[in-house]
Amino acid sequence: MTPSTVRPYFTDLQTRIVTRLEQFDGQAFKADGWARPGGGGGLSRVIEEGNFFERGGVNFSHVMGDGMPASATAHRPELAGRRFEAMGVSLVLHPHNPYCPTVHMNVRCFIALAEGKDPVWWFGGGMDLTPYYGYEDDVRHFHATCKAAVLPFGGEAEHARLKEWCDRYFFLKHRNEPRGVGGLFFDDLGADGKTDFDTAFGLTRSVGDAFIDAYLPIIERHRDAPYGERERDFQAYRRGRYVEFNLVFDRGTLFGLQSGGRTESILMSMPPIVKWRYDWHPEAGSPEARLYDVFLQPKDWV
Image 1 (cartoon, rainbow, N blue to C red):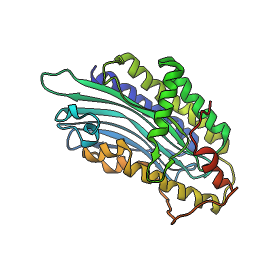
Image 2: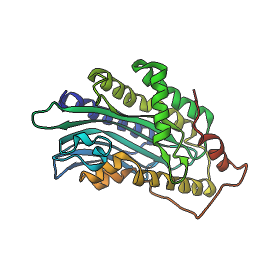
Image 3: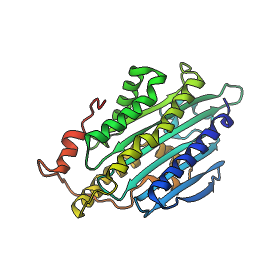
Image 4: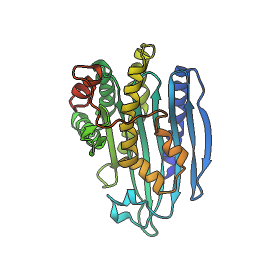
């Protein structure tokens, strides 16, 4: 396996997703190419104050370095001291409309290199949905699309494993609550030698290719829903949970910062308007309470 095998897929995926999102929003994404002093670089595609997206980014990066960051060796200590290459596409989209959910998707490949030793490679990725006001049809559609992407690569059991992994990963331990309604998450696929390259790369491509079908029908359904200050205020409050997770737990964010990555691109995922309140709780029976009571409860949506 070489980076030249994987890179063309990631760059094409970024182009395809950005093209479709620009068609939906009606405003172009800014293209910002960058080089990393330690090796490699990338292309950030960013929209701010669009017609639909308040902020969003679809990033491609391909970086390399002489030593594995702590976020990578914490769960793979045997790779400490190896050189690395990492590449992938990562996106986060924050709509203006509180009735349209925030979404995250990432697909990536990692290679650890050492003189005289075989390269160790693996894939990771997934996608997850973070609504502010939940709709059962939206969540079922998102999870059904995720499931369809996984079924050819392990069937029902593999989908159940990646869904549960997502529920476990996107969980704010200090809040004892999920970040959103989940989706898929996987990492280290292929590192143990039990999954061959074609299967690991095939699953990664299937997840990346499924993103538009998973998300666009949801925002098309709610893009013109009327809202007011109450809904925007709750959206800003719940966005605070997004910030907390990304800065405290997210392995991609930690890897980027620890490896000397480009800060502007790494923190592109942050929402533009956020609020925190002291010990706030939604009013019982309110639409805001329903998010907690119905949607922030992991379940089998399909």
